[in-house]
Length: 116
Length: 109
Image (cartoon, rainbow over all chains, first blue to last red; front, side):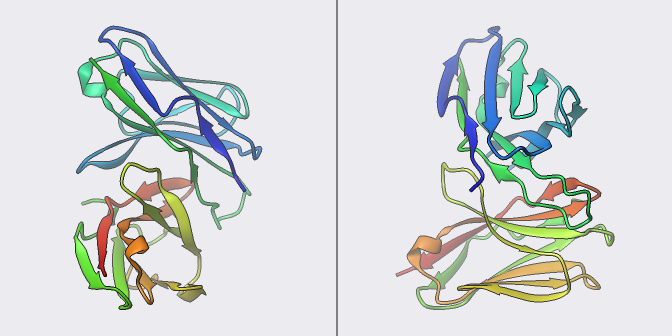
């Protein structure tokens, strides 16, 4: 089974802090993703990565950055946390087979982040 | 127009009934289709995937795809209270995933 591990289930930080959310997958997946999920807004893509050291902006990248130094690890960084970044953050990974029968994304357990 | 549309619900069905969840998508070139189940406070969990037109069955779940009409559906037979969750439809085109906002299903004992 695919295992996607997020470093924290719950996290409380203060406004202005730099926040790191870590995600590790154990299935040698090429693709990794960061989403946030808020009530009534569904899943919104923040950033994704198709390979080591590669990153692409998603739909809502403002206020966030990412790092992928190793294939199995994808980090989300809140440069200067603000209260409107309080949310559930979900990491996902998927295998890139090179075919058009795309493989599903597998999600970690999520990090519920509160910014005070 | 959203890429993927789902009725937010809630859809209420009695225990033992068939629950039918629907999803429409806007890009006719979409290639892969997934259904996820998400319990409250938890992360999405993959339950079905389908790539070709027609039906695909897995236990109590059946996914149906109609590319001409651009819809994909999920049928849950013999619904159980434990099936109560939000069901997310995901559609993929050129390795870009589009998620619907989900349909909340309530199965009443």
